[in-house]
Image (cartoon, rainbow, N blue to C red):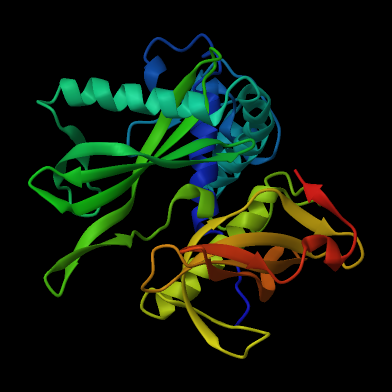
Amino acid sequence: MGNFKMNRRWMLELLALLGAMLLASLPVPALAADTPAAQVQFGGECAEGLAEGKHVPTNCAITWTDKDGKVYCFSSESAKKSFLQDSSGNLQKARDFVAAASVESTEKAMQNFTSGDAEALVKATIEEKTKANNGAFPLEDPLNGEQLKLAFDGVDFTRTIEGYGFFPDVKFHDPADAQKQYLIDFWVVPDANGQLKIQETRIYKAPLQSDGKWAMVARDPIPWWWIPASEHPGHMAAKRGWEVMSAVEHGALTEQAKNGGVFHLKDDKTGQVLDLQFIDTHQPVRQLDDSGHYFACTDFRKVGTKDQIYDIDFWITDKNGVMTVEQARVHKVPELKDGRWVEVPRYEWKDLGSSHVVP
């Protein structure tokens, strides 16, 4: 199995969204009479200052408006001139700086909530929108602009990523054809008032017809919690658990996509090549004290079965800020006992030596 390396494109997208989330809570300063307050970005702070990694308040007397009508404020004409020399690059630097700060505040605010709270909010929102739209949940498909009208089936599972929020994964189907199924992901975060809100909604899996049957296919780019994180905002030396999970899951899905939706893994004990499909990554993630390798457990389903589950362990290293999967090994195998499949371990993680949990 080849090494899996991270691409920063999707991480930048998440950082921009997090930046917007934080800035929405910042107070807007007194503005020039002709400056629309609703369009002011970064809470009125100097955009060039943020690009340089510092907070500089302004009165928005000096501004620049982009093609979308968004207004950026500057502390001086020289700051504006410097920013406009590379407006796109400087804007991304500013967003990254703000997003890095938002991680800590979001992580602290998340301590007041559980994944159950996030699920309750999502369910209530779905119910409200469904009632207001003649019994169907409305959602625009960004891929083709189609206005979907879906039937709610239930919450599949919810991920929690400290510092970023909760991510309920919700099942829907087309009311006209129950076989056309969707998985819709909701990003839930605490707002400035200490209440949970839905930050964004995305389609994770959509139906695709093949040989007369409907199958759910993952969208590209994949949802935000699998966004590759080659380095933590703020350049923290220690990786967080979600970053390790991101490396494993992105690598597994990328490898799976190369082989028609099948993840091939050679069983180190039997030599058999297993045909698997990725399900999920376990928590907690651990780091081995001796080697420094990160260690994550995952679940894969044997292709063509519903309940034959393999537990696969991954070893990951941080090479110059790039999370790389170096080894995968079968930890538990499915065995039929008393008429049902159970996972039987070949070894315990404690057998690998001392380790500690990665927060």
